[in-house]
Every structure is written in structure tokens, then in C-alpha cells.
Length: 371
Image (cartoon, rainbow, N blue to C red; front, side, top):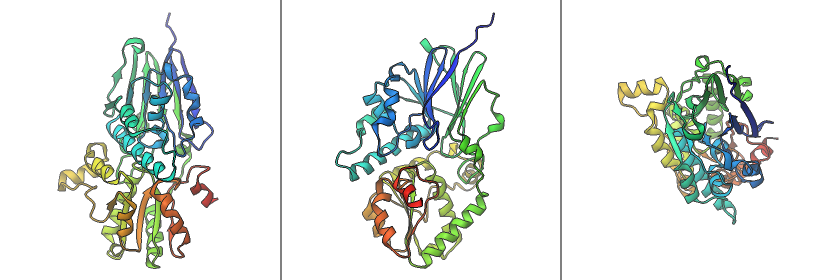
């Protein structure tokens, strides 16, 4: 008789919307932690459900390299008893570290207590990551023998992955965030190539999204920026450290290159790790879409060798750029970091614009400004 594999999923956060989904996947008594998101103000109660189960987690799977998916990793290893291997694609591993570095510095500037994790704890947690390529299958051993893990392209972020977890005849697909649209940087998620799973864990928000076509979105963005810049106002665009900001940089770089009028205005990427983020992205062309790789093969053109986007890692460097200008500053909800520090001046200036490219998290200052 065939022995049936037992599969069970317990959500830890994100099941009611707002936060990125995260939870425990149990397969025949083996436990996987699917993502470990945590964002400022880093309320420790958010991760408290993990404390009682961390000791029995056999592996962590990271899907994207931002705080919403990896922000709790350092704290969980240092404070909650998590002690296991971590699996991620190479870009997700490296970008997760940069996102945590930037958050650590941004929170430290605003709070005397600082971030609830140290830079050494970030390094220690990310040193546990086994970096995988897309479609590379890992066969676990020991207590987890028979279980296989495979990252597949999710779109939406550099190295972003959907995870295929298999044992015997059972297939689980974890799709916390995915993009079904082709973009400048990345190809769309290859959803049609996915096997029919026993259990599908997906972000229904992505499935329900019905955004404008890419060209229409970019045209509208260009109109907004040109209007406010022509009136002499600065534009503050709160952005994530290294998630969607890479696509936005390519959009604006192309916009400035195509319009000499826009070249009269400054364009600044501002975060504590902006230089490292751009350098990392420039070295990861094999993870990008066919359009990017074809341009590099034909003309040896790297899309992150910016001519118009100016990189700044301090507030002073950004403010030294003459106005009017566009400043892309972390964090995406303006709750901390350089975006929070620039916010009062932008709100007080009559011709300035505060532009969110994605809905801020509920409960943040960004969400309250849009309410």
C-alpha cells in the first residue's frame, strides 16, 4: 500500500493581508520556515509566534531580498533560537544583507534604542545561506531525507523565487509574491510552466492586481515628475532598499536619457547601501531578463552603469545636488531612513511632490498621509 505524505501549513503572518505571507510548512514531520519578514518599527511581538517553534525548524526558504521577506532573519537566529540552514538564490541572499544593513542604520539614526539586531548578527544569519540558481534542486539529507527544494523565477525582484517543495508524489508551491508582467529588468514569472501542486500557497493580491500596461504607467510617471520639476519643486520618492527600486532606477534612467529637458534636473538614489546595491546589481546580469542580457551581449552595455542616476549614501551628498531634483530615498513607507528625514521639508515646500509608487504599509506614516 502507498504511504500518504502528510503536508500541513501554519501561517505566522500575512494571512489577513498587509504583511508579506510567512509560515511553517510541515511535510512528514519536517518543518520549513517560508520567509521571515519583519519591518520597522521592528515590534518584537510580530515575531513572537516564531519563538515557540524555531527550535524544530529544519530549513528556511527566502523568496525575495527585502525586509518584508527576510527582515526577521537576524533577530530570529540571535534571539529566538532559530538554528538551521537557509536557502535562497544568490541575489536574494546578497540583497537581504543590504536591506538589513540599511534598516539597521536608518533605525539607529531615529531611535536611541537602535535596531534590535547588530551588524554582526546580520552577517551571522546570512552566512547560513546556501545560494542556489534557478531550477537547481537541493536534496535534503539526514532527518529531512527525501525532501527536495527548487527555486523558480518569480519576477518582480532580482533573484526573486517561487519555491517548489517535493516529497514522493506530493508537490507544494510557495508563491508569496510574483509578477506576471515582463519588465525592463526581469522576465515575467513562468506560471504556465509550474506543475499542478498538491498544495498551493500564493499571494492572491498579485493574482487580483490589474495594473496599467507598463508603457502607460511610465508615461504617467514622467508627466507627474516633469510637471512638478518644471515648477521648481523637488520630488521625494520613498523606495525600498533593493527590491522594486532597481526597476524604478532603470525606468528613470531611460526617461532622462530620452528627454533632454529632464536632464536639467537631478536624479538621486539615496540609501546607506545605494552604492553597494548598484554594484551588486551590475554584477548579476545572468539573473535578468532577455532584453538586458541581449543588450549586454550585443553592445557590452550594462544597464546599471548609470549616466543620469546619481548614487548617494548620505543626506549631505543628496542635498548637495542642485534643485529641482528627484530623490529616491529609502524606506518605501517613509517610516524610517532618509525618506523619513526628508519628509518634513518636502511636506512644507509648496511645489514639492511626495510620490509613492506602491501603497505604504498600514499603520505607517506613509499610509496616514494617503488616508
